[in-house]
Length: 297
Ligand code: R5P
Image 1 (cartoon, helix red, strand yellow):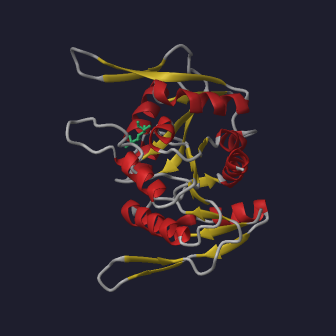
Image 2: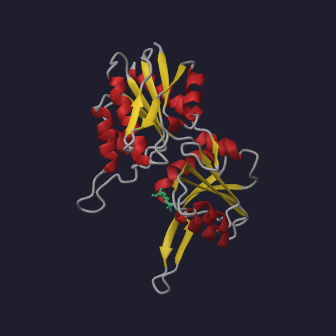
Image 3: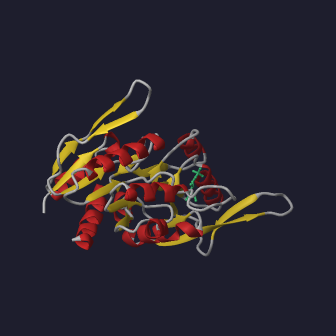
């Protein structure tokens, strides 16, 4: 079965790498903005079999979402093969429940509208809460964790590594990176002194003294979480701290905050473009796509 890989501008090169790895043609979607600011997309040629649509959703989440939605609708007019979206960074994923009454589950709105317009499968990377895929999509989907690629980046660069998750929710990711690196892993717990109000963060069970600590999270947004974790780990005698995330959103001077906190190196994947997006998720995405296709066919 043939495939056509479509690149929206925000593919960050991932569309081309996937097309080359799978041996399929790459087609660029046409895109413009109407004089009043409205988004326009056009699929310039019919897919040869399955259509693979590649676009990340940052920067400019709202626009990227509409481009994806409109592209799925446009592709659905051809209606011969499946339409699979590859969305390396799925925006709105952190609003995954009604934290306050009256709030939307934004990620539900995103996933359900893509499916309603004809999406037949989704590949995404390191989703904040992977369970939302099963909850809000009835078409097949895969959440890829680029643990092997992240570990690969550090192989031979750290001598006495300890991989830490900034909280228990991020433990699985840290564990997978540690396994590929042959390192120990742990997670950080946060405690507030009831008298002074001071926040202390420390590893649950392991000692960081003399270790090259690698803290791994899904997203660095303002950098607050990572900077605080790094300061505490350095305060506990870590030899060095490196910060790693999948999605380098990096707003409000995040990178400066991180380096100022004493972090030696910041490393991210290329799901979001940034000066530290040094690790490509393309191999993981291609693997995920192959798996999804097997499941669908
Ligand atoms: C939170 O649950 C996420 O996993 C990240 O820890 C968080 O989004 C990072 O945000 P910031 O960089 O603004 O602290």
